[in-house]
Image (cartoon, helix red, strand yellow):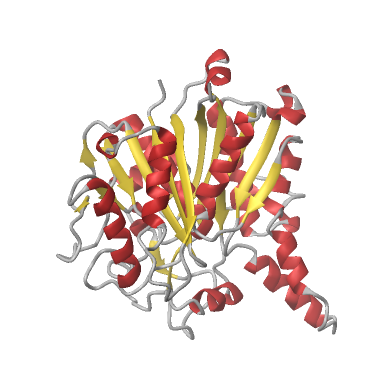
Length: 404
C-alpha cells in the first residue's frame, strides 16, 4: 500500500501577512498587500506596483552571522522554514540527520543576489567573470541553507519550473517520503523586487502597468491586463501519515494527488496541457470531480491564459460546477512561492471550513465559473485542488484533502 503523506507544519511569509495566522486572517478578510514599490524607486518603470512583504526584519529572526551572507529571498525562506518546523512540533536536532531532507523551488528569486554580485564584479573591473554561474548557484542556496541550518542530510534539490515549481517541489518531497525519508521540508519562497529583477520580469510582457492597486491584478475580469508580481511564499513540513500519528502530530491534510504536463509547441493546434494535469492529479488521488470542493486557480490575468484555465476547469467540473478562488489577487503572483502559499490556504480552508475570496475582480460573462468574489465563503471543505503554470509551458495540479 502506498504510504499517505501529510502536512504537519506550515510557515508563510506573504505581502498581506507575516506568519500563517496573519496571512490567513488577512486573506479571509480580503486585505491586500499590493501597493507601490518601496524597495527601490519605480518611477522610471512602466510597472510600479508589487506585493511586498512588510514588517520583516531579518535581524529579528536570524543569527547576525547569517544576515550578511544571505539576501532577502533566503532570509524569508529560512524564517518560513523555522516557523514550519516549530508548527510541526519538530526539533531537527532530535532526529537522525539522514532521515530529513529539503526540496524547494526557485523561479525569479536570486536577482537581488545576482545584482549585488554584478555590482561588485564591475566595481573591481572584472567584466567577464561569469555572473551567470553565480546566479545558477543561487538557485540551490535556499535548500542548502535550510539543510545546513537544521542539520538535514537527506535528499535535497531545487526545482525550476517557474510558478509551477512550487507544486513540483511538494510532489518531489512526497516521492522522497514514499521512498523512506522520514521528514521533508518543502515549498518555495521567491523575492526579486529589485531593479534587475524588475527588468527581467517586464521582459516577459505579462506585468500589469496599472497604478490602481485595486484594479491592477484582476484575473477572469474583462479588464484583465496582466499580473502584479509579489514576494514571499510558504514552506511546509511533510511526513508519512503513520509516522506523524505515532509521534502525536496533528495533520493539516494529505497531499493526495499530483499531475504535471508540458504544453505542446505553439502553433501545433494541440490542446494546452493544463486540463490533462488536472485530470492526472485527480486520478493520482483516486478522486472524482464531484468530490472537489474548491479550486485555487493559477490566475494569470492574461485573457488568453485565463481562457485556457477557465476552459480546463469547466471541462473537468462542468459549468459553475465547483467553487473557484484566487487569493493571490491580494498578494500578487509570487512565482515559485505562489503555489505553496495556495496549498497553505487550501489546507486552512479544510481546517476552518472557509474558502477565501478573490478580491476586486468583476467576473466576465465569458467565463462560466463559480468564482468566490464577495467575501470568504463558509461551508465544509474536504478536498481542494491547486493549479499552477509557468513560463515555458509548465502545468501542475495538486489535490489536497482532509487527513483521515
